Image: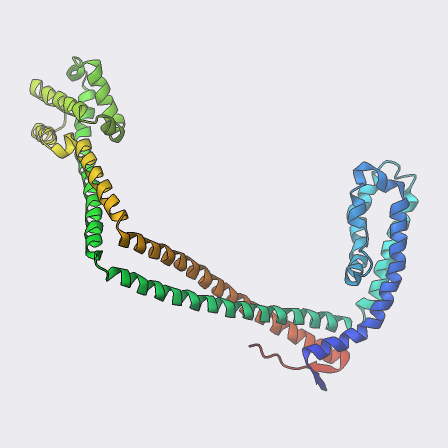
Length: 382
């Protein structure tokens, strides 16, 4: 049995189908003229409710042979299922039913022409399979080209990354880098100190809030308080962080701490269920802790030091240079991640299409052998 390449086999099957294909197109063109005549002359399509169907049912333009054959194969079923019921409810449909019958008969005839002359042609299925196979091989090769480009981009990004590493090292070896290092270390230290200060305040407050809540729930202990004292206690208990920011010098905090001390001194039974010594120690420790009662002042001092440090660091020429390098490195890293993902997707797509090519080749080879008496050369994918 003769062997053929995919290209030779596709050319051969195309030649076998071509004569009948041309005959079918000529017959269909005659029916297209009839369909257009009916659609253009029928009063049904002029009504607003079905005017849009004209464009949907209009045959393909001359020269679109494959589209015409597809139209012939599918339009009759679409007409009967979707379009005819709509047209039958259009005004004047009963008086113009002959137009509908003629249109349906013509579309049915177009389908019959294709089915009788092409659908059972021995070379049609091999031709369609070989066309599909060729398209898959072309797609596989296209993916191979894309993969090669992606690998080239990956290599370029790697070289650029190495270059930036060298550039960064060169900046780090220049005079003045030690000063920048000290500024960075002190900046990080100040941030850690501010975070620790905030955690210290919140931890202290956590112990105090239990005491304050117990105090406010004792009507006898809070009966003599002034409105300002009630309000300050309420604000600290409901939103301590926000109240702390507004109580800039800690005066309100000291006031409610002293209220707790006074309550304890006047009546030790105020704090029911709590160890009196622990309560006293907690309150006095907070009162004597400048990091707690003068929190805002310490924070402002830290913020001023952070801003001054940051200003000096940001204006250091090596810092600006290294930040520029870092931005380019971040951009390269992002592009590397995107490229790696694209490479992975490309490899996955090629593997899938290679499997499809194998399945289509096997089927195409079988029908070529059984219907046209030749077989296909093996495909070796690179």
